[in-house]
Length: 418
Image (cartoon, rainbow, N blue to C red; front, side, top):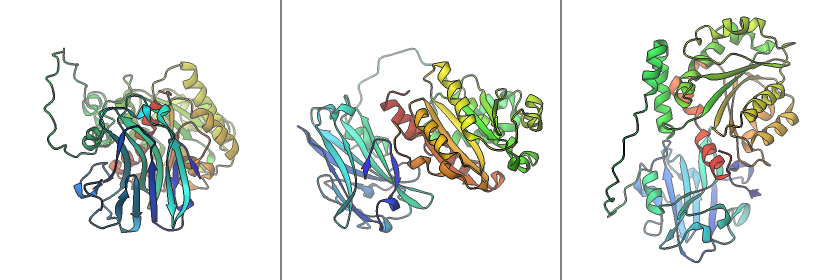
């Protein structure tokens, strides 16, 4: 199977077991150092013994070994639960940049049989001296592959620091030129407390997740798309949809200087509602546009493509390349799979990330498979399902919502989308 940049694939679709060989072959006029970082759920090297390189070629459990150069033997079943992700990297030792490399590739093999390959070259890079090539990571109880191909200009030392390690004998940094200090950014908690003190606890928990995902200084627009088909009536009448609004609004306030949450609802057709703000969020579902029972959505069947088209056109017409985070709620019954695929392929070229959440339903159709769909410039979708929103702690929900957004931001930047 050919793997493209940004693509994510469950390993179970490539191989039957959990023992494999990963080989990275870079054709370069420079000396290349290959390193694997075994990091925890926070993306940090919490155990230095899981940084595998020429001076430390094996992990304590012997489930991760560097055989030679860029070849690693891996037994995923033998790794401790604390190792959440394996990040395989390459860096230049000495002068030169990754722009100089020629046709190169990585490959995965099981029992000597190649099951996947990804190709790359210096055309994808500029002044980078180190690149993260491929990740193997846990998600929903299974191991997956992600083609990363992201770079760092400062080389291996920058990678070590990125993953929370320490660089021995690092030279003292030169004094920085004196500049006017940037105005301090108002914390999310303070923004929310000033206008909507009822949301302060949610804001605190959202802030923690944003910091863990290294999104504290990210600017983005945030949108919410609500399934308002007939099968969602109980979710609306019991207040669960209003709770979705409440939980997402602190993130919109953090990401967007306007502090507004763009909002749509759909049945057999869709309608754009008023932006949600800290001043109108209370009882939003029962008051905006006359309340959810009076929204002009036609027969209350679900037509996801109609809503997707409206969202895409709205952000495309703005001409703004600021990243957009869309939370798309559905309770299932998805059947217009081919139309959805075409729209997501189109949207992959736009600065829009789609987080689909199944809420209390079933038969989510293509929404469950978009994360692994081929034919897109970047992977622009993620999906998870919940039985009931109020059974999930806010901290866990925010972590789930931010799970793949940071990776999309990196891939979209490399592709020139943002």
